[in-house]
Length: 153
Image 1 (cartoon, rainbow, N blue to C red):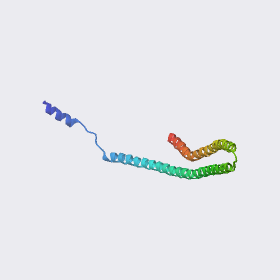
Image 2 (image 1 turned 180 degrees about the horizontal axis):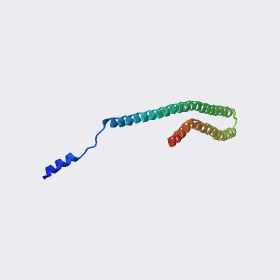
Image 3 (image 1 turned 90 degrees about the horizontal axis):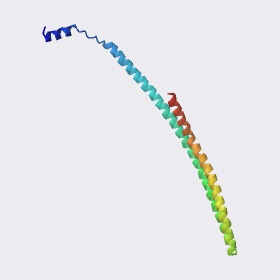
Image 4 (image 1 turned 180 degrees about the vertical axis):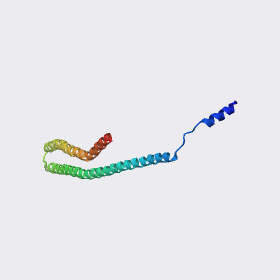
């Protein structure tokens, strides 16, 4: 027997498995349906996340608007107090009769101004710290929730 006859005989004796196209179609359909379902779930999660983020940003914006108003009012009050103190000091200086009285008034004024500045800085810092806390609170809460949800998933 020649080599080509042997090869032809071997090929004739080999059976190839039959290919059932209906089973493959069913598997492809199942795979596609699973992909669509996963895409729908991912979209729903993304949509919910976007809606929650929008609510947090709106809340943060409203809080920032309110807090900035409080800070502005505090700054205006500080400026008003400083202006009134300055005018009072100027009136006192105009009424001074001697140089020693002017020096005494000036020294007293500067001491009071330093004390007042320290007190105003403490008050403003307190208001600003509360403002930062109020503005960052919704964002912090949302971030913690997102981390918790991510760990659960």
